[in-house]
Image (cartoon, rainbow, N blue to C red; front, side, top):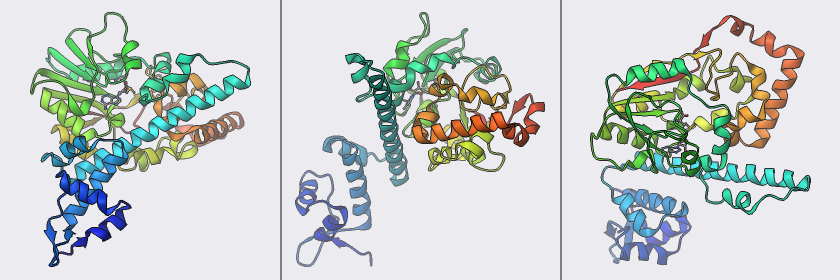
Length: 371
Ligand SMILES: C[S@@+](CC[C@H](N)C(=O)[O-])C[C@H]1O[C@@H](n2cnc3c(N)ncnc32)[C@H](O)[C@@H]1O
């Protein structure tokens, strides 16, 4: 027989009051599925699972009404809730990292006797990661023509294209009817004049009818979504064809690792914990994955771009345009950069990575998903 827990025991385990549980019962958020012989509330394993979701969303700041809608959604099972919660918590962590970076910057400025403007002081509060770091993006992030060619080829004959997580619009095809989606105000503001119209929304909840575009694309953005699988399903819902440029976490964490993460920034592995496998991602759109080698002279300054130009990572401007460096935190970043600097000047980096000199492109786990 299934074991049930009393209301007192559940309250004790969850660190909430019995009164809170009674309130959740009264408003229909969490009904214990049975009663003891004495008529007291008793919670089943499923009830406890639902309570865990309620409390986790509560801790993230959701209101009880919003939580009821979330936990009652029949399309979201326990695993999907866990993934979503994990994504939201990471987003919160990113925001905290961005605030630490902003505070460090202000401390530095004050140490030099410079007062930051009221706008600068307030910008970081409540901002998303890209609202905090996005202004550094255009310095080194631009269209890499060889990768663009692969993406545009995969779009086939699509005439209407939705670009989700569009940023400043780097990979938007010039010869199609493009609509962009971008949640960060800072990124939207930096879209060039004449760029495609841009809607403020997130991938997980696209404000479009089913099948309203010939194709949907997402470039270097899926790893920022709180719930990548839900977001990819949304792309699939609104478009007949889906093209996604992302990476294979197993490849990145496994053998043949990129020297930068292997030898200097092992903390990168923490960012991959719980990340959906390539199979999960391709299944979400019902497609296939193709490797995308990174050319040695890649013009889009993403994290892996400078695999054959290691000294480039010493440039603060280059690092600020890549969210990985903010996400690992200033301590890991400074340690990685000073070790790399030492190894470049001692010749140790060159000794260890001799084989790279002869390569024109490297397989670093980047993938094009096409459905
Ligand atoms: C690395 S940038 C890539 C921008 C652009 N696609 C490119 O290739 O240059 C990642 C973008 O994803 C956006 N983003 C973050 N969370 C998102 C979400 N839930 N849905 C859609 N876009 C999101 C960020 O605001 C940021 O502009």
